[in-house]
Image 1 (tube, rainbow, N blue to C red):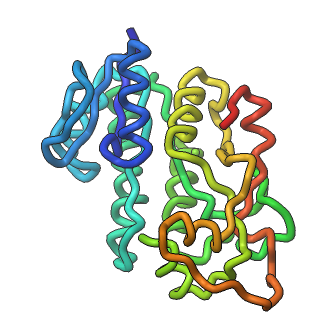
Image 2 (image 1 turned 135 degrees about the vertical axis):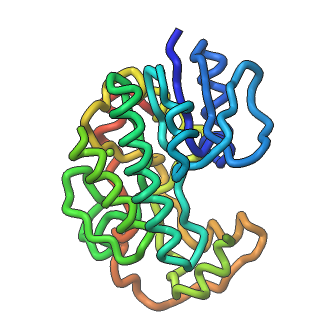
Image 3 (image 1 turned 180 degrees about the vertical axis):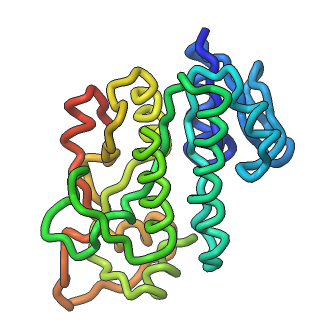
Length: 240
């Protein structure tokens, strides 16, 4: 039986991934800061990514580590960097010291790509994030590579998003399936985009959220911003 540590187990992706892994026979551990409703048989390790003792207990003897935990719903940039970069560094250090043979799978964000690109983003594109969250995830990816990866209407109003602008998306269950595929080793040492086949517009997301926004006759400045190319992951055997 494969022993696995999952961070971010109570998040949108983690809460869908953990039951799947437990059902597949993985011996699961979850790093949690407080009591959580976890699948039967899952071992809860209390602590966080800044607690060396908790990290040692969480990773020791693990065959795989899936790092989903991240901070992004805040304007506190120091907190973002501490959670996403320092926390990842601490986890990598713990794995090196206490589980050096473990496979390490980390999720990132499409926000690492250049929003002014002229086509859907490829995994090989140069990254140029414009905000702390994307920048912190790029830095965390680099750490791993060196050691080796709110409501829509309010956002639309705040950032001036064009209602016709489309974004690459993926359901949390599909992201969980992609992480499960990564545990087979087919993505080892690679960055892989996870995206659905049908980009969704800001207008449609607002409608689905029950808070429609007005249309616009203004032209889109760059229809490719926020779009990713999902060819590689399909070649690896995943489909949404």
